[in-house]
Length: 189
Image 1 (cartoon, one colour):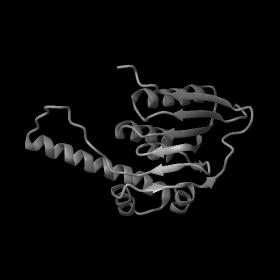
Image 2 (cartoon, helix red, strand yellow):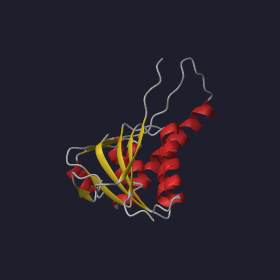
Image 3 (cartoon, rainbow, N blue to C red):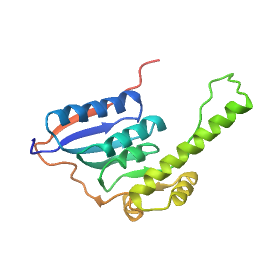
């Protein structure tokens, strides 16, 4: 078993290609016997589907995962960050909690039942996100939902008081650790 943890730098939105790359990197390292991971996270957010899927995947693995905010962890990125059993943050970082939105392509027409379905999906997404954050902070789900509705931004000390961050520290990982980088660049239009 490798002595050093595997470090995965997730400097990307939480979308299909990046969450697939994250899960594949973890799978490959687990096949090689790795059981300790440090997931460095700085993300503007992304899709609820991919964030909840990645969170549930990370939480269900028989490994030790430490997450470390090294910049900004926004939106569904907070759920990904909660995937760590131990959660760290650099001193100059932020966390942004907000509600869920729905996008409608131009000239989309929806019947009443389709609108009800979309609204119900949004409500369930908000509840699921709040449940994840509540389960990892000890805060009641209702308090987390209110913080999301209020578009709450936390600095590391506030996030630590919330129970979201366990420790604030500058050092990201030990010397000699392997670093896998996951980044994403928008394709040119």
